[in-house]
Image 1: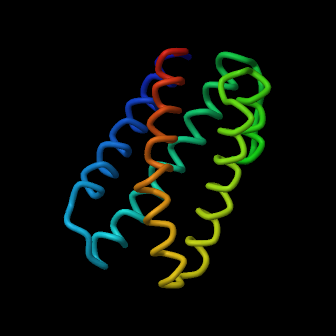
Image 2: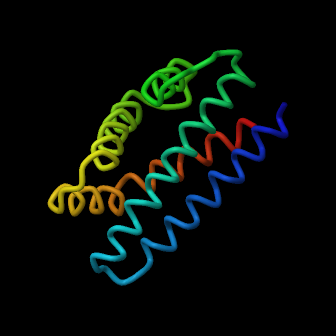
Length: 131
């Protein structure tokens, strides 16, 4: 079972690397769209990796990203503040997937650059250390 989790952690790592690659490019609209799409991929792998961790290591089945963040908090893998940020991140990911608004996408790019990438990377480190 741990091999499956290790594979998911590797996929999550690759998604984070691709996001970081986009973040390191010169800012423009094309790069902003790339950052947002790569953020979506990294986010999906973040919660699905955490979901698999919770099932394999804690024996808990989770069916949504928000429940996943709350369960990680219950298991002391996230702080209250981190949990709130991941919950907000989930809402913003859902919004950008269903609606494209230029002002929202600009604000989301800033959050990804200033905070969300770091949060996802920290989650990767936590899950990697636990696997």
